[in-house]
Amino acid sequence: MHCVNPPGSWVFSGNRNWSGLICLALLSISGSFAKVPAVEKGLELVPEAYRMAFSEQIQLAGDKAVVWTTAMEKAPEDHRSAVAFLIANMPETDLKSLTSEFLLKNVQLAYDSRYATPWAKAVPLELFFDQVLPYASINERRDDWRNDFMNRFLPMVRQLKSADEAVQKLNIEVFKTLNVKYHATKRQKPDQSPYESTESGFASCTGLSILLIDACRSVGIPARFVGTPSWTTVRGNHSWVEVFTDQWRFVGACEPSRLDETWFLDNASKANETNPMNRIYATSFRKTGANFPLIWNRDLKSVPSYDVTRWYTQRRTLKINTGIESTGQILQMKQDGRIVAHLVINDGQKLDLAGGRTYQWTLMDKQGNAKGQGSLSMPDQGSTDLRLP
Image (cartoon, rainbow, N blue to C red; front, side, top):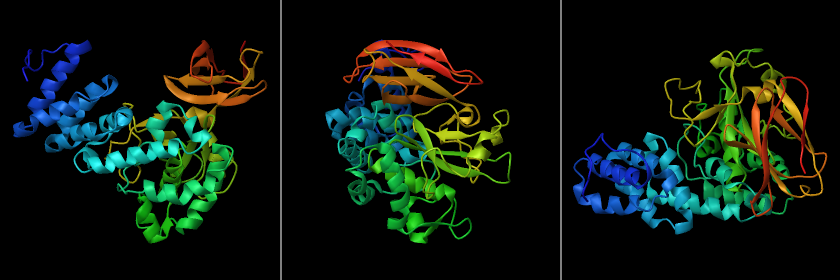
């Protein structure tokens, strides 16, 4: 392959961007020139949206670069975006330790669960990629859990009418099935992987949250790890789970209750967003530029996160008023480009959103075609209305 421009002089735009990135990636794999054709072929299959990030990742992977470009070659065409997303965003330690077989199996099973129920199939692709596809939540050991969990838990929830019902059932049955109980000291470590927790029989709130998240993901429900390094009201930190049904909702792992009703809600409502140690964070697999503060491993900076403090401290109600045209269509709400709600609308519905924030809304038909859009600002106090045609 001929590199037209020297390193450092590429202009990253359009096709020139991709040509330059291929050259940079190939030249960065020191001592592996015999593998360059295989690497180049895999790189050319990366969807454009992930090309730059993917190329940067295989530079970090070093001698393992061929593993990830080979994964792109082996992936079915309709799975390439998912595979590229995971590789483009995975931590450096995973780039150097995981296998293409592990990743491809994980993606195939995630898609299997996506098409197993109507409510899993309705999950927006953006959320499916970021909070169903991932094989891990934080820094836990990378276990191959998805097939096992899917076989155990999908039959329990397949016939349920909604993801909301499925989460509540899983939060009871998962811990019974796996025989794992809460204990703050009998667990071996806080950040236990699923099988470390089942082998121990005990887990802290962190380990329990990881188990519930993986169980939800195994049946196609978006789920993410949430927590605070330190409460402002009592001593200590805490971890829990957010699941996406029609919007992000929270639940304590191994604490059977309705969504958004937990013992720690009062503590969470008093979080302090002016102090990083007292904020509330939600994890993301997609890189965000911010790190989740792991209280058990303060030096590790490889878990991306969002600050969701205001969703707990200044939650406000949005009342949706619909007309004939919008009833039965889909309303999607975004904040800073991220989906925070996605639901089939009927008149009189309500959403809980963080106050003092601006949201973008899109009204879509069931095929995803936009029928209207706009923005709204949630007040710091009180509720507000969204009127649709």
